[in-house]
Image 1: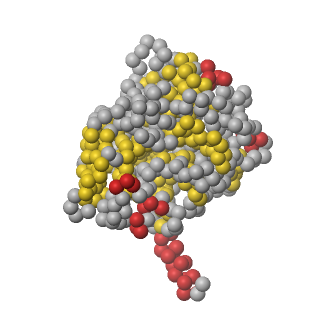
Image 2: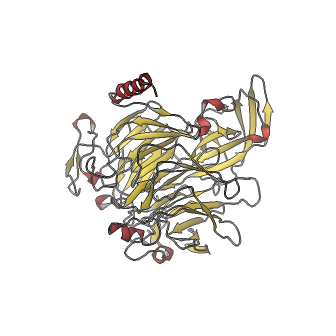
Image 3: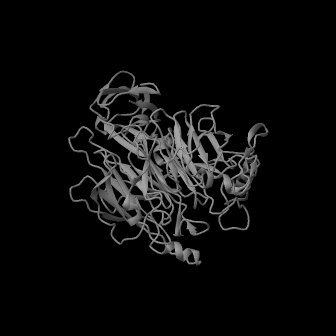
Length: 546
């Protein structure tokens, strides 16, 4: 490199380093990274996208002071808090995706390691936590001035490290939690408060657990697939009956917290077929014994395997695959084109305070329709380690928002291997590259926030400037997820395909599709609707399924 070139790079870095926040683009064929905020003042341990394109994030109230003061001299007074009885700093923020700005929010009780989901009305209903938060239900409505509302004793049992999922009837089910081998519903409309689930005690490794934050998915028959440790069941929650027991993952290694792999329900396709197939993919984690070994200072290499199973098969079996790199504490995000992004995490160790090592900086893209052996593609690496307590969610523009990482019991920025991370990044998959603009659809109609109904014809009008391949045009619907501790709760992609593509004038096309036929396939509520052309998605629009 010439001296002039080196000087130019240094000048660029100096100019941008002086900004309070900035955008830095790193372009590559396999995605690019964008630093959105150097600090939002709070470490994003939990993350949820709302229907107004804002993302609610929070960590825990017993970290002590955060780096973001509450506005107008407000303070939270909590005599039960284990760190500060009076705290004038925020532990939750609302991030506005469209303006790249954020505002402080106030949670009253401890939300540490809690759970949640978006209700059919678009409100975030969030449950549990630690200490005085363990039986709380909290509600956040999507508006520019809204703040957290809390319901004392909204839960029948203490829920810490539990998992939530929206049900076809519009309720949430809350499954498990530390020393809770049962489930309950929010809101409640039955006499019994909790329902025993022996499967959770059976998968509890003594002294370690390895069954927290279980992976829960709504199956196409209306029952719940529940995975904990290294095995799974199909639960008829209406009758509190296990209707199927699945095989143990080959090798028997645990995949649930603190061994902390991740899992997705792969995109649901052929939705007009009499029998719809559903597949689950579980990736990464830590071998059995990793947590206890990490406590002793020995960090065992993470698992490099994924296990995939068609859960609707009469005789389901796990099929094993190998990732490009081992991962524990990673996140798995379903993209609008049906691919899976595996992001964040460590190459060795376990979940828990300072128990992870060897950060994995490169995401991996999983292509579920490819043949085994050609399904993984390594992506452009970030420069920021995202270890324990990292998060990621899909945004309406197709980017993936990434934040968090705090492996310490308090905020700790110096003298540690992995400082507390307060920044926000966005990863732009390669489909957002400008070279694909002529293939990228732009949705003209319906307008955002339109209502759609079950089992009805829907016409989506798009603008595509390049040559269109009608057989490679598809409409997809994505349920926004609540992400924490390497699991995106309620995450769901439905591939509506297309019934017919009609060319109009001036590069405009009508795409006829049929909406999902039942709430077992797609519970009522808000979804992001995308049009995908030759694997290139449009920006999404919000629709309300009812």
